[in-house]
Image (cartoon, rainbow, N blue to C red; front, side, top):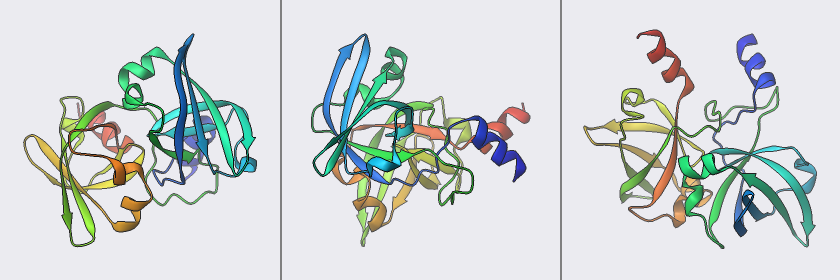
Amino acid sequence: MILWISIIEDKKMFSGIIENFGKVKEFKKKGDYLLKLSTNLRIKDIKKGSSISCNGVCLTAHTINKNGRFVDVYFDVSKETIKCTNLSNLKKGSIVNLEKSLRVGDEVSGHFVFGHVDCTTKISKIKKIDDSFQLSIAITKEIKKFIVKKCSIALNGVSLTVNHVSKRTFTVNLVPYTWKNTNFHSIQEGEIINVEVDMLARYVTQHLK
């Protein structure tokens, strides 16, 4: 526990439990890129310099403006982040998963997530099973060695559990609450998502080399 507290204090981290949505109001090249999101996160919960996970990407809010019932939050996004994540596919009206960074003492209901995307991949298939949804996700070479049955994984910033692994894909299940309260409810087969593997899997793999 002391180790995890030290890590949280040293780095901004998340739990993969989505707190709210952000709707893209503006996304344009300005130096690097400027991203403006509209959200109904409480304005007292965020401030200038706050770290916020946007589709699993850790970004820093530099401007926060109250706009009626909503809050407009502005982020600078580097060219490298655009290159390595699905933020490059954002357009006006796109829905983005949001999560504020953890503070020491916060409940971790998902798993520890850095907000550093390992790769992007595509959703191969979406299958409704009773009230839940099963997603088949294409395995890329960057994450292949980290994916095993029952491991944790962050997809678009959402903490999920891998249920099955085949040669080319792995599957995760989204219960109705997660489906409704993340942007997966608006995603189609073939769309690109952000992937971050579990840090514990990464460290264990590195140790066994």
